[in-house]
Image (tube, rainbow, N blue to C red):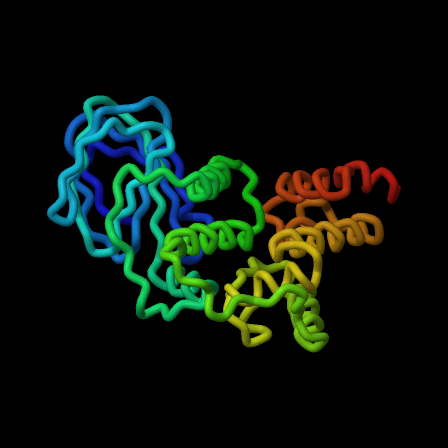
Length: 285
């Protein structure tokens, strides 16, 4: 994480959630001047809540503005700067690894070597903002979604960062193209064999020799749902079968099917099946 002075306090963080390429921190910033040192990651700061009068100095540029809810500052890796607010405020700070930006360039059919972010201040982008608030909801949730969902959000955010320069994707996935039967079977077998483990998009992509950005649209076109949703449905189905066919304690079933804990399993079972583990247990008995 980039270094902040003592006027910043972390309210929520993704640091212990195992995300790759993306880190999210919801910060309370005290009124006054805050220095943010250069980082190895690209940084987004999305203002949350009531407006403040703000001043920033970064990359030799100065910018005065009234910072409102949803305003976005983009600071590329390596740049530091000063931000000054006339009252306490809260921001969602998103750190995006350069590798994730390279994956986004690949998804858009761009040469990653040509991708170069420029500092932007008080940007308004409704799609980027929607992704950011979905990420905030993830670090707020006591029961996280499957890790593949957070990684998908990170890639979507990175894609939004590099697109919009007027270049058409050179290698977009054609409509109607799906995974080969061999790739489908490899993915299904890999997910079933590792259902008790924390699966990542990179793990699945490597199984069939594709990039993450190419796997995502092909997977959705083939299975009719995003990767993270498919993995969750398979976890729920495996848990359902274990509840109905064994005497294993529910807490053990949750761990055996890749859920963080029993309440995590209960949450997703209720959402996907409309039933709780307790209801299924009573059916079994």
